[in-house]
Image 1 (cartoon, rainbow, N blue to C red):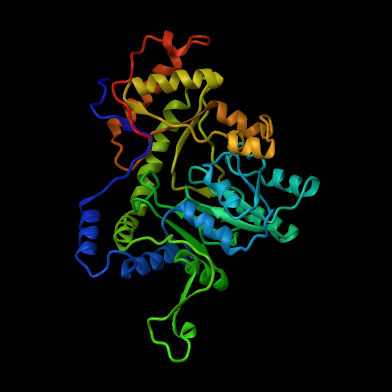
Image 2 (tube, one colour):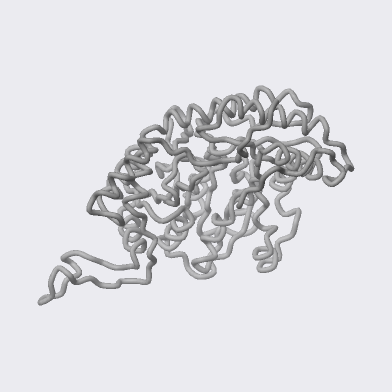
Length: 412
């Protein structure tokens, strides 16, 4: 098959004429920063998830930071999260002076193992907060983690950055990720590689009135506005700095784009599922290559299309290099967070800490997945993975492979 002229990335935004028109309309309005589009986007996300309160913000990392601040965790608090996630899921704990630790993943969901979390609580220490990370669109065992939170007394933040539009079933009922039915707070991401995008952006969901009020204040410097903050003799211009917050606001321009994208969430979800299904059906025939078998209680809006390759890390690098030489740019999600020097040096975390996570990392690869990926491009990816796995020879270095150098590079 002829190599496409443009590189096929692991993820990218898809912008339509309707999206552009929505942003242009916002540009022509009276508001560029915080205006009516922000409030409307929050309302529509509340309708999607069922959460009582939605606070949109600059990005998901800001959302996670604000969520930890709103919980008023004491300095030195213990927070638990997944090792298979982007570093922000742990960094948000460090930002507020908490200490991050990690429990192993469930090999099926790639999310925090509720069994491992329970064992940690019983044998080591009870955390003050657990950041339960959805992976690739799958929520993990939120109901059981929430039950553990009631039993042991910790708070739950659902890091649903991968899970806009995803659902999970508990008993006979389906719940949207971000509903906060089984968490105290939840966070979405609207980065360009996510399901829908605002360029950069995030959202925090909660059903707690007090948390919502504090989140809104912290998002905008910690300032209080309104009649209750105006002393006698002062006018409507008056405001009070109540605590040290941040400028984590999002703009009307971004929210206009997000609202437009949200309108086609159902079709985006369907297209992503079609692509993942084709990868699973075709690549599942390769000996030693494993595609995820997601829980029957999960209805993911796929953010990632992951496979586990035969041959361990060496084989994975050969396959990665081969795909890049064919204008396909996959990704690896994720390096175990406690391997990073900050965490390894700060807390003495060693390799071997979470065996299931490390086993997954050694073989995982994320294939291209986005709404505008064509059937021909999907076919090209499948053919190249088949070729790469067939030609990958144990012990052969990348420099020995006769696959040619990449024709293009991308900026990360």
